[in-house]
Length: 577
Image (cartoon, rainbow, N blue to C red):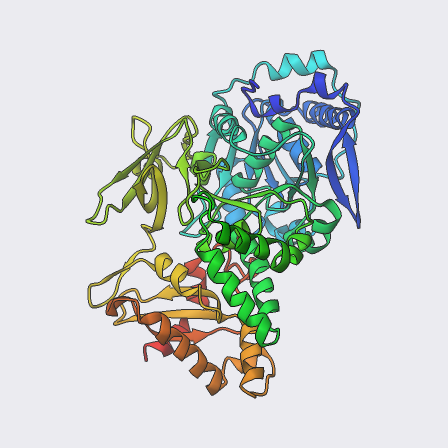
């Protein structure tokens, strides 16, 4: 496998002779299958269209996709093959942010699929070249000879894409990645994936995000069966229909699956609860590669084939492995999946690294729960400015490191050294070669008493509570640590039923004195194992979850702290009143 540029993954001469269908688009309740011939014809048709539009080498085209589909993949690669640069803008960006991207890149086109986008951003799209990717005029496919003449001018060192960050810590910055940056990551990651050509793999994460985009490039290199199912909301229907062997996900999706199973068992009668509690403890202590123990072996087999059989069935029955990235995965969830016979592996990366830095491997002994795995073979990791525990800022170096931030030389210089080392801004520890992330450097804050607080560490701790679905730790320059909490209403409703408390709606239950007392008691239990300065001493209960539509979550479901704090300014003030 020797692909130098992203579009080399579409092996047009090989695929044009391929009758096998291996890309599948969701159309209504079914899937449209695309053979290699159809893929090549559509791809070369896009190339011909862009050539007729006189797309110049280095010219930029803004793409605003949500979930991936075949058209997005082919049009993305066609732009790059014709010498253009794809500018990825997340669907969650505001009109103001999109306007800045347009003026900064001077892009030739704005390409969309969701018809709401042109309406939402109408004020800045007036008099611009606006295209719907599924409505682009069909052209006679470009000949192989003409295609070769144009694409051979594109070098692996050329700019492939600019991806604008989701803006969780400020104004989005354009990350410049070359073909070499991306393909070095594709080559490294593909060798680590447990995927064979006959496997079925699903795609449902935002295509604008480098994690999903590079994942799809890897799947294309492996020529496996890829099903583009649309948004994550389609998972319940797609899983039993497709019966996938593998997919990539963000932790929140697995957490929801896990929480649903937990809630189902906890709603059962006394015996069901007892059995589930025992199974949870066995799963928590499960070590996959420990020496053989017949009792533990039988326990895991009982959990796997009796208690978790329904869970596996919900996932389609064939699932072998899941790769998780973009945020922290709770270790108990990874262990529960593993006990069910599903290898969940957590990786770590960022847009600036195209994206993978480290991955827990799928081979025996190459995985550690609670870590983000071993660095890729072609990536160096260094922990600088370590404290007494060995934690420090994570720096990385390798062929996947970005070219810089577009038109932001000062911001580039702040994170990228002349000899190629990139500061990730994350704080972590390296032990026995495995990397563990402890927090974001920018998120760490001091209370007014001068104590440092790493919010992510505390959030990951408290979210283990059955009664907490989501939490954001706050306390910058405040006298104590507090939190915004979105309760697990399924667990709360069951608790209310057991305690004969009338249940209405979340909007009113968060104001219920008994509910608040329940959460206070729960927090007191979890506080016991924390030093005093880290203990949670105040909270506000939310009745609505954070969402991408409200701008409170990024496209990878990470909370945007600045936006959430602004939206709950009054409630936060009341905590400290």
